[in-house]
Length: 489
RNA sequence: GGGGCGCUAGCUCAAUUUGGCAGAGCCAGUGACUCUUAAUCACUUGGUUUCAGGUUCGAGUCCUGAGCGCCUCACCA
Image (cartoon, rainbow, N blue to C red; front, side, top):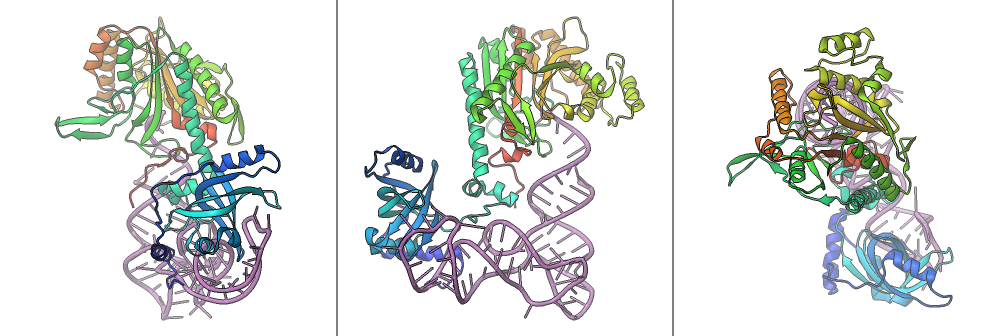
């Protein structure tokens, strides 16, 4: 028939043959009565002996031709259904169309009666058949699917067609985010949107992406966090707000980091970090239950119980337990460094005491926190937006929480004293002058807002992608982001 | 950025160890077959072995460089 062996050229040739038959390969609309899943369900519910006629649509994903009759499967978003075309029922022209001009991957409509085959599969006996959209390129192989990681990421649509596990991950991701929204909406929180393009970045320690607005002739930054805008809303009297959106950090890419990632930040007036802990554990248990059916999950072979309450332990106690070092006894950089060396603990140099504490934890304790754990009370110099523990000058009411060794979120009792906040920004500036390149810039507009009065507030940030990784048992953040960032080819 | 591994037909993989005609399955094409479902049977097509150089009588295989990806270390959440 066709001369070429190139799949694409073969199919383009078929377009010409279809045109000669007066068949539109891309009709504008279609009518159907059942999805694949609905048709199967309808048959099971129908009375004995009742005939059911259905119109179904979908992508042709298998075709078994036996000369004068053929079996095939159509796949739509609900699942797949088998169709059976007999030459004497559907007629020779339609039958030849199916055999000669349809290809795997094409979208097809068909009408017919449901019946059960000898092997028990509910099937449409085709009376009429129509092409809905011609495919020019072949799909990945039916049995082995698409395995090449690069192709899976760059052509995610093929991954979704070929690999059921990929579909499952992204359907679960959607359910998790819906559950998070539902939980917060039902607890009196208001979903809001704040600027992605910001004149001053803040709310986290990270390097930003920089861009430029032509009409304003002004440098803008893609946000690294929502924090400072959401606090302005708390000041404005929106007592419970949250935002789900992308943050952008111009840093390395690995299995737990991606330059644009989805975060949720939640602020609750008249609450503190203890309230935020209760919110975190309730929210996780609920989302896990809703998305996976249980608040006990399996991650990389480990059973993890997300049921509240989670373990609460201070940073000081965790470090003492994990390294034998009491940071209360080593309150200077040199003393803490010496204590680590004494115990043979490998650590790298840091710009200040607070970062050294963080480094010690990250290198020697974090990976041991498999069951969900809140770690409380952080050094002030790495927490410029958190309120001090009453009576303390160097520790703030902050926690991060860890599951499966992964840092999953961060929260504090928010600093609402505008003069203290100004001093913290100044301290950050001094740390920057001393060589710390991850400090937060002073935001005068934010300070002005706070000077108008901010209630006591609990604030919380959760990395949604990592949460999805946990609940879908994935080890790379790229497996839970539909289109991960790739170098251009 | 450093280190390791990988890239062969549309897809999944052999051939690389020890340099010697680049192969299979699926897909595609032709034919047979009116209950198949990884349909079956027969025959057939399909390759710039990621790219650019080099060594060699001869390179998918060895060497140099580049590209892209994955893992890992560093940095970050």
